[in-house]
Amino acid sequence: MTRALVAAALGALWSLASPSVRPLHAQVIDSAPTHPSVVRTVALDARLASDAGLRLGDTVRISAAPNDTAAERVVISALLARRADPSEIARSEYRARLHLDQLQRLIGYGDRVDRFAIRSTGDSARGSLLRTINDAAFGFRAWPSAEIAVRTSRTFQVVRRFHRAIGVITIVASAAFLLCILLLKIDERRRDIAALRMMGISARTIVRSVVLEAGIIALLGSMSGVIFGIVMARLVNWHFQGVHRTTLAFTFVTGETVMLACGLSVVLGVVAGWVAARRLVTVPALTLLGR
Amino acid sequence: MSALVQVRDLARDYSMGSGPVHALRGVSFDVEQGEWVAIVGPSGCGKSTLLNLLGAVDSPDAGSLTIAGERVDRLDDRAATTFRLRRIGFVFQRFYLMPALTAAENIELPMAEARIVRTERRARVQELLGYVGLAGRADHRPSQLSGGEQQRVAIARALANKPALLLADEPTGELDAATGLEMIDLFRRLNRDGTTIVVVTHDAQMAAAAARRIQMRDGAIIAEAVT
Image (cartoon, rainbow over all chains, first blue to last red; front, side, top):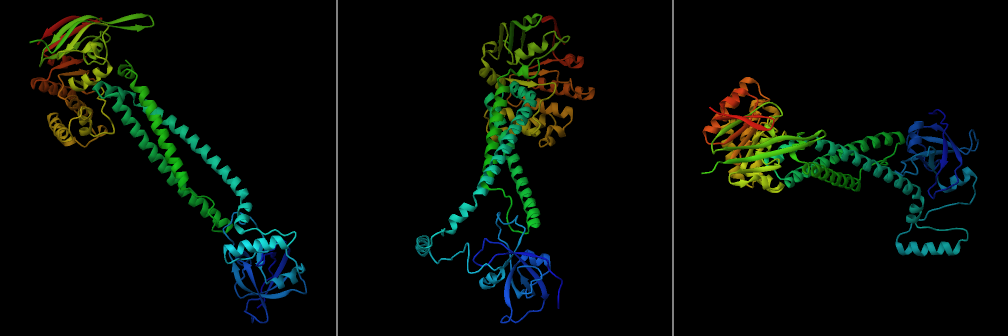
């Protein structure tokens, strides 16, 4: 059964990865499976399949230009889920994976590639293969995949540093706020502290109690903040994973973040408590009572 | 046998913008062991200043103060703090109970500071709560207690370390008339059981209940009366 035209621009991505992207055009002509010996297969981007209402086993016509008479009939044999890669989620084009000869024929690119990947079976094979390629193929440069990953993720390292800077600024600003609040809260208790001094409670005991209390409050506060952060991170991920149809985690609270937040908060709480308590216990009790 | 409290020519001046204020001008008196003394007089006559000196919270500019054989006027801050903890019980007009602590914990606080062992502290707390009529309120926080109950807890706290002298600054000042009378009864019972009390008050009934009244004006004692 013939189905509606799918006006989808396909960016070609074949199994050996081509950087040269040319639009392809697909037209659904039949949703019934066709015999594999007659019709070649194609793997389509799962997002394209979803948007175009295509299913596994559908037969489509695929060509480099709309209404091309040389369009080839192919059967959708696989749906490709996009990797959870930050460099890919913002790309809006769809991808199809074709057999190499089929792709060459379709795009008229000939017997030529710009980039290709080779899977090696071990470290020793990889090293010798890299050397062989680099020695033999002038103009080509072979890289191990790990190094390519490092090179392509530099942008994200910069972004990560920005995020870290924003996080540190936020934490420091919150800490300053916490410090002020703690100083004010402790200052509010000047009459209680005066009464304790008059009862014979030593300055050391008072300072120790205030510091302990401030430390516990700071720790509980930072833990509440961490829980709030985790909940917010999940909400953010849920939202953007839905928008971009990916499993990529856009934000998460790391152990390092938790340690930094709790550690800094406790240190500041203790310091604020100590400063405020020391200031109050060195003032005569009668002065604290306003006499 | 010498008096528990010996006050001799006690003077205290405060520096104000307009010049020195003579809050106490050479006050002398004794308080015997087991006595209940009320210090009365108009506002600003120096009675609170005298109470603060008796409680080693403030230091005199002249004169001497001896309590239980110890020269209180010569104590430095740390020694004065220890002296207050072990020898003086303070009852404040506004109670000053720690809001986060229960009644029992408030009473236990001075004993913990005095390093009394826990079992002894707990037993003493129960005894004191029973004494002030709050045996069933041990686990209540100050916010769950009435003004009279809070003042009873404050009195129990002041008695925790078995002080030689109980000082009270307007203990009925924040209470209604009926609760004030209950407080006077409690003070009467405390004194009958051997507690030496010096109370500063504007409350005529509280003053009348004391065994001796010291009338002050302009930083000096102008009259004394024994009931």
